[in-house]
Length: 181
Image (cartoon, rainbow, N blue to C red; front, side, top):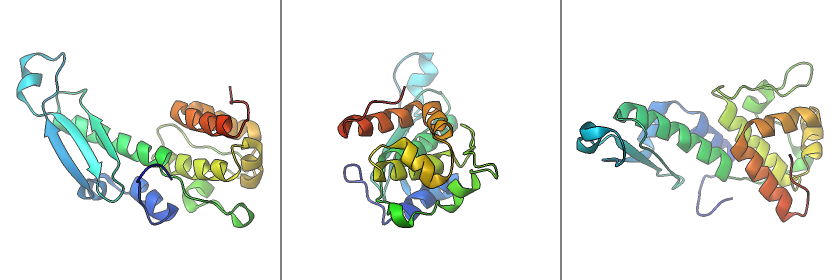
């Protein structure tokens, strides 16, 4: 698990990732501040930049792009969910592994892992896939076999998310494997 990030288990992490915005916001400390940069006088006069700190995990996310505090809050929540998915690892017992409900719902009847980039389930899927890939020391083909999908299907999903690809390649580098391309 990364740094001092704390969740009791992967299920609690996945619940936090998949919860609705209002529930997740109640778990966060919100810091509003003025953003610098382009945007004219309005940007410098309003506290539209948002920084969130998730109290249970200690993870942080921020957004400053918009002059709208509401838009920045939504972006920061989205980034916080992605950070949870990418940075919080939990051990997986490969011998007894059964995909979680969300990941299992993304495996089609013809044994394809299908989840779109904008699908609200994507962050939970990323988190669980990274847990499994860590458990098999970066061997993507072994992870695909465990899931019952093709290696090319799993690699395609990994490559569709640049930060996920970077995490997998960093793990593969640490264990002496070639990076995915």
